[in-house]
Length: 67
Figure 1 (cartoon, rainbow, N blue to C red):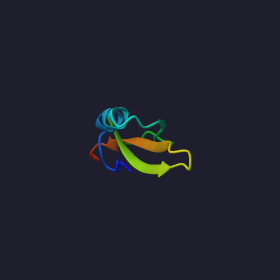
Figure 2 (figure 1 turned 135 degrees about the vertical axis):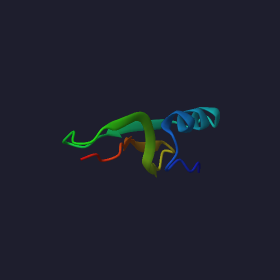
Figure 3 (figure 1 turned 60 degrees about the vertical axis):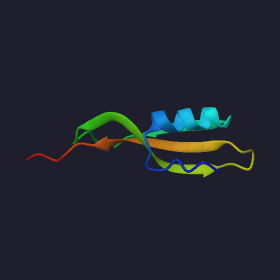
């Protein structure tokens, strides 16, 4: 099992493809856009199906809060 949590999505995709693993990606974002989001996505959750498919949830890092 490849540990992917808290890693950049681009690196995770490369690692999974090198290991010949199948995967699904779901990107999530806040319902309200109060904070700036960075362009880079990170894996925040991973599940491995009985079929051996990685289900990944990715999100962008939130920018700093400025008042």
